[in-house]
Length: 333
Length: 285
Image (cartoon, rainbow over all chains, first blue to last red; front, side, top):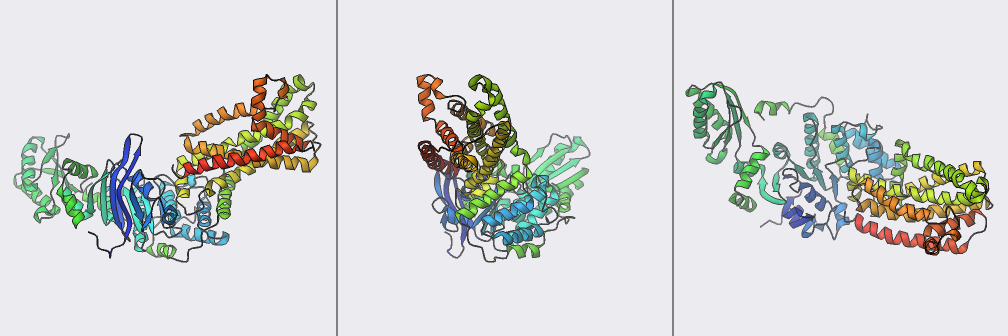
């Protein structure tokens, strides 16, 4: 029951796309509010890229309907193309050309006249810190520079919807945070971003809402907060000094965290999921309490860390309980 | 995964710091220019082909070295045996070699397209709001420059070896013009294969399979009168035969209207049929 006040950038229902025997999309529904970052989270081969390609008019769905700002992606593909831009997983720029030539070419294809096209290209190169590299061939760029050029190419026409397909895979931490800053700026100026990622922390940092995709289906949808509370806030990893005390430590930990604890391959390591704010207690507090209990029992802890739930953990939880009511709750919310 | 390392990744980058201000300036929704027309979009893609030649001049190897070798090889290999003298054979062979070489080069259109798709740059082109065939038309327009270049190289080698066209400059120019127009039309066969086939190598393979019989089972090297009847029948309907006949007649200064018309009609049919198949495929990759 969506209220008519919120405009949808993307509205998809029952999208199916098969390649031979594999169903890359197996009935995907999406509702992406305009002006936000929406995350598609899933492992390799989950169907994220296929979904993006269908929505960007590059691929026709076998079944189902999708609209971008109200325009049908198959019947009104040209109208959709006028509003979207795509930065693919693989370089969607010409690596033999220079950065300047790439952007000038695309500017001309968007209708800028010759001198204006160069001006627009120069303006974007400057904003993305690529002025010095403007006359170098793209194949000589670093991974981070290439990705920046790719994104610059996508916002030449200030699109209303920007698709970013795994924008940070293979990038070093610094380049990743640069891309994150760029995404925030782009959204700050009213562009809707559909972002696919394999990293939960990336989706967490950028996206307002997330759809978790597996085997071509949306297995969970909601805000990052909703998703996390359904999965648990994180995982405690600890290493003991004395491997002999591990069983005892495991009991203490399981009791305080109220969650199962796994013994790791390393004889002194333990890992336990923190249930999070299920009981109104923050993950950090729970973890601190566990640490205090261990100290009280006289168990020496050499290393202790509290990390976010990994994508693996999200999947473990979501796929173990496929009929999880949390999904319905989130959709109702 | 620990909280300490998570805070470390938040340290500001030393080199490029995205600034909300400068990014905001380029994102400000200014007046969008009107969409380019079909011709302008195609020419922009043609410009891309020129830029690629500038950056990767090695790709001109096939339009320079290959035709030279073809001309020299066949002139001296067959010349003495078939026409008594190489110089005499050259008058018959050169227009044929010209056609063979240029038609063979058209297959690189398919190879180039296939590589582009593999690299992902075509995803961007296909998501642009421009006239749909523009990317392919532009690509072939760029290739036409290569065809002209190859034709010039062969002609130069021929003139050095003693080729003397009776049609003069006008005849030769008309012949090359007709050849390039036909090659433009013929290129659509390869764009289709470039879109259908999975790898560069398979595009090459199929091209050879089509091109070898098409160019050799023609009147390029020998007079069809010496062939068995069934082969003559094929050679007669082979568009390459008609093209060679037309080019020869133009270069000789005695235009064969029948052959020229046949070539133009065949070219139009090829472009319409394979152009449509290509675009059908292009919209559904």
